[in-house]
Image (tube, rainbow, N blue to C red; front, side):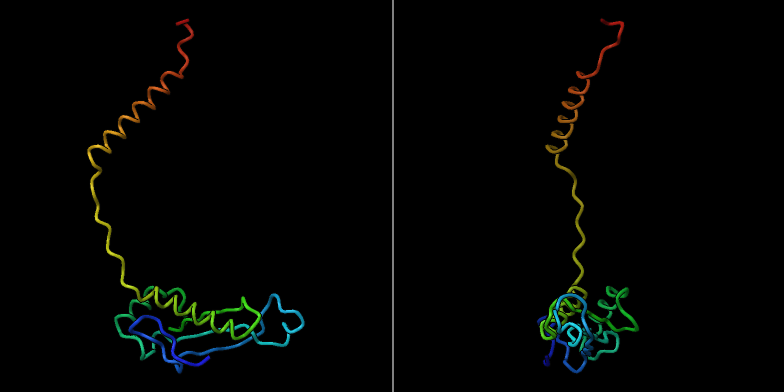
Length: 144
């Protein structure tokens, strides 16, 4: 599985900066599960990479700080029986993770006041509910 890994329309990770490691996967696989290295660990050195622009690198490092180990992000895939399928899954997972990390922050929500009509509807429904509850109350035992 060679080739660059596209992250955004303007940025892709060169294949030389990706590191794959294979090991035996747990789970289904029949007789071949103990002999094939189908589990994939895909690593990318985010902090020392030359392929990522500096502003994106800083944003990604901040957002992925808990997942980084010495500046390296690692993604594991072992859900498929075939190594090739796990390699593709790991590449897709890493691309999605990095794309979310470098996405620009969302604009802050502008606070708005409730409309006069919505305030009136709220107060009217509160009065109706209060009246329903008042009518359910038992009267004083001396009233009766």
